[in-house]
View 1 (cartoon, rainbow, N blue to C red):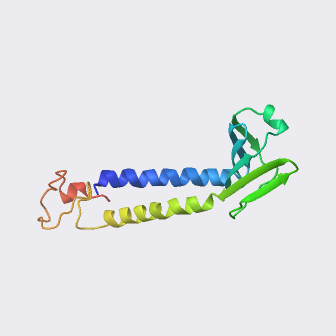
View 2: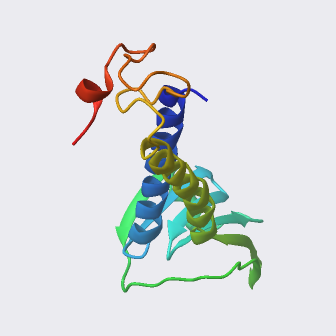
Amino acid sequence: MSPRRAATLRWLFTAATLLLAAVWLGSVFVRVCWRVQPYDDYEISAGRLTHGEWGQPRPIDTLMKPGVFIERMPRPLMRWHYDPANFNFGSLDLVETSYPLWPAVAALLIPTTILWLLHLRDTRRTDRCQNCHYPRTGLAPSSPCPECGQTPTTGAHP
């Protein structure tokens, strides 16, 4: 893999991990709910992503239109488990499925860590050009790099 492609992939995973971690931690304090259809809700709150689907119309459905709703959580709350639940409110049926966000953060954190460790390993190698990381195996110590033209003394970092 080329250094540019590896750097792009490394920073893409880093940005995705940080964004998802911020959403996960922020969901402890802020609730974001978006309604796709009158009976179909998605919510990020308390460290989890929840999908709720009502089986029958509710009186509040006539008041709430599809869109995004943001509100502060009354108190910080974090749930760590998978929580499928079926609720029966008289004649109103709610099927709610809840997924914790921390496994997704962990799943992104593993390849991000591996990519950064590989990058650190590659940059610390002495048989590579310090400027472009081209392998200098078989080259004379004082010859310029065939890739970028830097000599070992001018391309070296302090």
